[in-house]
Length: 335
Image 1: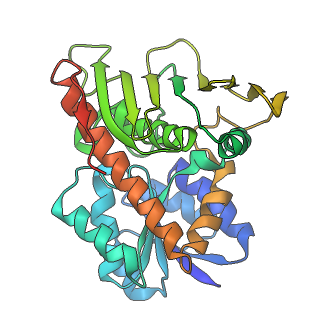
Image 2: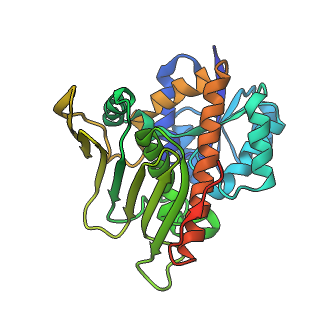
């Protein structure tokens, strides 16, 4: 398979993707679209062909798929452009943001079509998560309880050439840390539980009364198999740490940044597995995403699984915002 990609947006994330495209051997970067003259200049400095708009790029280039590396509120627009032009779309999280009729149409068109949208759920490919998944997959009963705790000393800032603090602007980000990091927490929690989320409860906090969105989230997830997970996310810490746990009836597995420790019978170990959690671009994990995306051209079962996962992420986040506005009341999540 040999495909031509159009990079939509040329910030930190796109540059991380670019490194894999240059070495993958199956994908060629045909061009870059970015509204910012400075970012187009940066792409030209890497020898890339640049455009100020998608329409011109599609007209002048032979494109097989878009790689959408722009903020959340633009995702559906660019995915729709791709599908309407007869090309596929690989999209950063959250791929879906509001459950609209347009998003439902994208889902339906992608399930069985020759062209399709596919989410970048890159935490699946963090080395420490791959190891954790080995334990979860081979433990028959699955964990009864899980925990996710991700603390940051602030939001990830974008490139200085274009609104570096866009994550604090709801018109662009469509939410705060729940929208930004919540997708990773939700799909990794489902990975750990081996089941889908069926209900959520959430409490939100903003560090300032004039902030545009939330900076701390306490989220509870209840799964169809009876398991539960607590999720704590914050941009208000004085450090950067990532912690995860799976608790079984006969032991537990914990992840503290790059250290994983298991007491589960048959899986007793303590290991350090470098996973680059402190690299906000997570570029080292994109190779796994790209391999999965390329596989989805032929593997429609995989495609369906990831599309359902992306849709449920959106439904969980929407339900969490609804819960937070109703005193953390449990909200059902449509399957």
